[in-house]
Image (cartoon, rainbow, N blue to C red):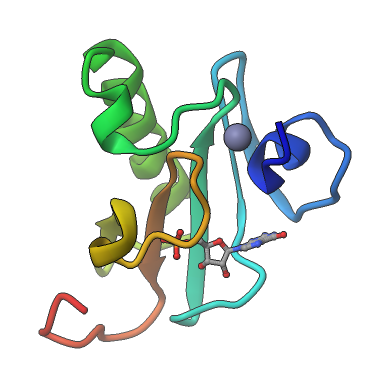
Length: 111
Ligand code: 5GP
Ligand code: ZN
């Protein structure tokens, strides 16, 4: 499958890695929307949150890793976790990912 995040998970495309375990990895977004902008992705391909909704153990693990990443990156003053789903949700990479945004006061608007 021609999926950029599968290629990152396979090490075929380099990324600035923050965290890795058997199920997922976290790396810095190539085009940050905040002073700190990380992505947490499962190693296995799921198109989106909607397609992974039948795997709550995986989703719980990914959220736990978001919190670990926030701790690792020093986001003690707060941060935001976002996942975009589908075209109307603004999803541009069709491989489930959570954005972890912080390092500054974020807009009160969600998007
Ligand atoms: P989406 O718009 O699907 O919610 O988020 C996709 C994110 O992936 C964007 O924030 C974009 O900057 C990031 N991104 C796209 N391609 C790459 C890449 O090759 N490397 C990294 N590190 N981030 C990427
Ligand atoms: Zn993929």
